[in-house]
Amino acid sequence: MYASPRRRSHNLTRTLFPSGGFAKDELGDDWKPAPDTIEASAGTGRREFITLLGGALLAWPLAARAQQDERLRRIGVLMTLAANDPQAQARNAAFLQGLHELGRTIGRNVQIDHRWATGGVDDTRRHAAELAALAPDVILASGSTALESLLLATRTVPIVFVAVPDPVGACFVDSLARPGGNATGFTATTTFEYGIGAKWLELLKQIAPGVTRAAVSLDPVTTAGIGQWSAIQAAAPTIGLETVPVNIRDGGMNRTLAAFARASNVGLIVTASAFSLVQRDAIVDLVARHKLPAVYYERSFVAAGGLISYGPDFLDPYRRAGAYVDRILKGEKPADLPVQTATKYEIVMNRKTAHALGLDIPAAVLARIDEVIE
Image (tube, rainbow, N blue to C red; front, side, top):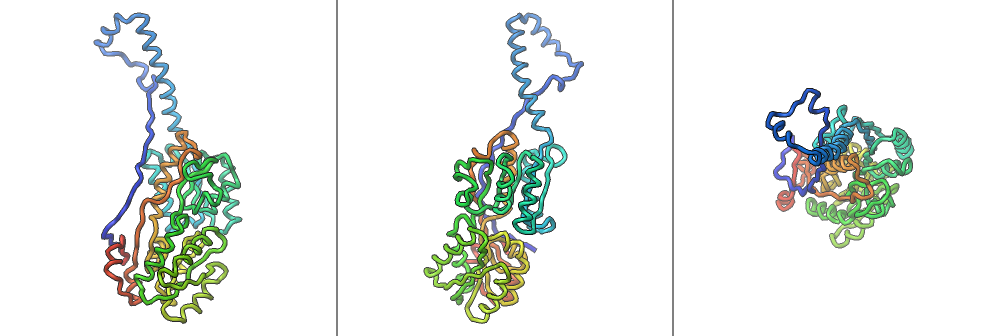
């Protein structure tokens, strides 16, 4: 059961680009003008006739373009989650909602080809190559691994990405304002703005003031993982915490947390990565077993039983990605569409987990919470 005492959001203005027109066929073969129109037309001379004819000819391209916009367009979607993963379903639903709001409906004017890559980098690259071979009008890429794999597969098919950390630093785009190339989209703010790591540490210290050491999950495979760790390490002394990196791959988290939890006054920060998202149930179970207060980077961990999260609303960019896809289908180029960042942030807490840990959440923190999961 969910209770939402308040929601703070800052939405970007969505700009639509309607086009229209009509063709002669829409009037029907037996169409006849009204009598007053005949009377008014009786005195129409050669010049007026040419003017009317010219106007009709100018209207024809508009009609043709309107009919063209209604043709079936092909959209590819590459996600690095399983098709039955609740988070994958929620993200896909948000994307489809964004398309539907702009008149794009599956079966009527769009066809969507999904690929769900859960087997690592090689599996993602195979699915990316499959999608590129279909020559869709545009592809949605979820996450940096999906985007990198698609850019290896094609430099011509337009790509809209979501949840990609530091796309400039990774050389996916030339700049945020002018991406260049065939890709644009929405950054993963929790990783691109590495300073958010300091806020995770502050939140941990606020909900568990006795904590003096914090383990920090680290995905060494991604450049974003290194960037997050560096920012957290730099901020830790000012907050009064000692930080210890924990490798989330190859069983490293199991071994390190088991030893780490034997000490007192310890906590955990789970940073953003595609791998940690896929493994969120196992991570939450492991943290609960060791009874550690933990701060996560997004809501889905809290919904799975984690204590508290702070970060952007990860579904909102998927809805907004629908608008970018629509603009590309109408003729705009990814190179000219600026890369955007998150506009909605939220703190989500699991009350049952807080009680299980015996935490008394300060009133100042409770006042900032956007959603409480019972």
